[in-house]
Image (cartoon, rainbow, N blue to C red):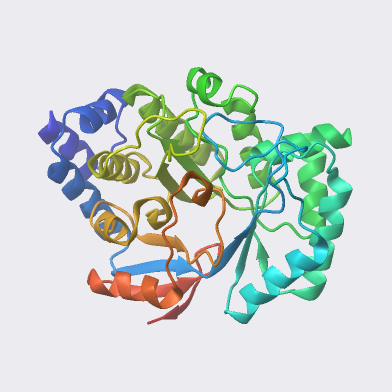
Amino acid sequence: MLTRITQKINAGKPLTRKDALYLLTEADLLALGKLADGIRRDRHPHNRVTFVVDRNVNYTNICESKCKFCAFYRNAEDNDAYLLDRDTIFAKVQELVDNGGTQLLMQGGLHPTLTIEWFEDLFHQLKDRFPNLQIHSLSPAEVIHIARLSGITMKKCLQRMQAAGLDSVPGGGAEVLVDDVRQEISPDKIGWKQWAAVMEQAHKLGMRTTATMMFGSREKPEDIVEHLFRIRAIQKKTGGFTAFIPWTFQPDNTELGGETASGVEYLKVLALSRIVLDNIENIQASWVTQGARMAQTALFFGANDLGGTMLEENVVAAAGCSFRMSKNEVIELARGGGFIPARRTTEYEVLEEY
C-alpha cells in the first residue's frame, strides 16, 4: 500500500481519502516523514525556513460562543473579563513595530456588543498610525458574528473591513471541519460550511488567508482526513490560502479536558498535511503548542515555516501552554536544523535571510 501511494505521489497524482487514512493510521512514522520531507524539498529546494515577526493582540476575552476546548473566554460579568481600550491596543502595536514587526494578528471572543463600526474605526486608526503594518486579523466566526450584530451580510462585513484596513484573515476557528465534531466541542460556533464561505468570500475580495486545524480533542482519524480534503477543495476553487497550520488541543483549564495529542501524533498529522495539501505552498510548524525541539523536528516532516515570533499570545497560554521564542531564538532554531532562516511578510515575501 505504501509503495503504491509513494508511486502516486511521485507521479504527481492526488491521494484519495483511503490513501490518506492509511498513511495516518497504519504507515510507519519515519516512512511518512520521509515522504513529506521529500515533497517539502521539491517545493522549497532553496532550503529556506521562513518566519514572520508578529504579535497576537486579543482585544477581548468576552465571548458568547463558550467553546468547550477554550480556556481563554470569559462571560461579560466575570471579574477578569476585559475589552482593551484604544490606547492599550496602540501601545501594544507600537511595541510590535519597534521590534521590527510586520504583522498584527487581532482576535478576540464573540463580544455581545461590538458592531462593525468599532472595528472600522480601530482599523482606520491603526492604518493611519502604522501604515506599513499588515492587519491579519479576525476569524470566520468573528466575521459572521460581527455581521449578524451589525445587521449586514457576511460579504458586506468583509468588504467594509477590507476598506477600513483589514489586509488578510487568519484561519482560526477551523478546529476540525466536520460538524459532528464541532457540535461536541463548540456547539454554539459556526458550522464548517460557514467557515469555508467566509474564506472563499475573502479570497474573492483579493484577501489571502491561512487555514488551520486543531486536533487531538474528540475527532476520529477519518475526521482529520476529511478536514484536509475540505481545505484542499477550497484551495482548488480559490487558490487563496497561503499556508496550513495544524496544532494540538491543549486541555488544561478547559471544560472539555482530556489528554493532548502526542508528539508522534502531531508529526503524523503534520506530515500528512504536507502530502495531502499538494496545492498549498506552505506548512507551518507550531512551536506555540509543541515547543522549540518538536517544531525543529517538524521541519523534517514537511514543515517549511515557523510561523510568527508572537511577541504576545494569550489564548493557548490560558490552557497552560506558554512556550516563548524571540526572533533570535527562531533564527537559531532554523539554523540549528541546517536551514537558512528567512524573515517574511504575511504573504510569504522574503524580506531578509540570516
